[in-house]
Image (cartoon, rainbow, N blue to C red):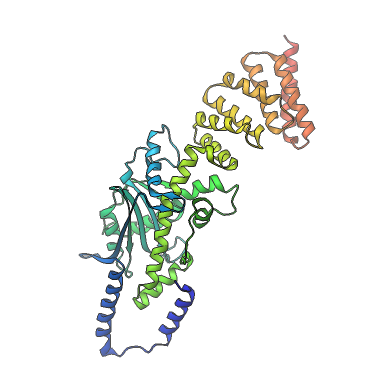
Length: 414
């Protein structure tokens, strides 16, 4: 592919400098353009689909075997990821549990801009589903404004999804898609009720601490082993579509459809990678394993969180923090008594904010659960000593002193 920007610039210059056709030539030119456009689309495997009273759209279909590689992964691993979540009890933002594999739809759209306003038009819908032992791509193209009912109808009559997988689709793709549909709800069938797995949020949670950017193409290069060649920059989508509307030559659109195709295929393998990392984090970098453990804790899967933090206690420079999170997970999963040995072990470690937390938890247990004020006083005094030693926890000193005075009063009464 040549330089897209230069091509578009030359195209626009040609458009502005070409003389307008004479009135008697308009009809014949129109017929010629339509036939040439159709021929160019068809040659590339894109065919028009028409709906009575709704206009038409172009549809392209393509498929690959599951053994096909995409970067360092195969599409089979994407299917395996969907299936792996069936065996997991509980919930997780990446989970497709309860959804049949054929009902999972990888979804991406192209628009004329990046905003959510009325001036931002959706003109390309791209989807991938996995069925019949193959990965199936379907793309729907808006041939001209006014054909939106046909675009939606073509998509909706084939859509059998109960779960979308997108990249930033919760914030961008689906709000735009559903918003455009709302304006046509009297002309096309209703949208299905769908779950939504957003891989941007997952990528950000796991990799933002260690990567400057988690844009899809950064994830491709740094995580998936995907390296695109001659890719159309996404920010040129609006210009490419406008050029197509003016010239009815799909050359630029076909290149943009390849960009959209690459995006969606990367969703399949990124889902495979992220699922494998979350479910089996042993091979991940320590920084990523740390975020996996914190994510399990955040979704309330304390048994998984405690197992993961346990594996990090001796394999991470944040050993004391890992010990703190481990003890907290055990306490959430069971009770304070079960967590006490872990808190006491941490309380005996060198001065650190996590050790202060451990001392306070031990003091709480001995004061309120077993009424051993002497032991509670011991851990409170140690917490105060560490706070004063560290010198950066002034806000913690007041509550600890208050606890110390209360324990001294209680001890004096026994």
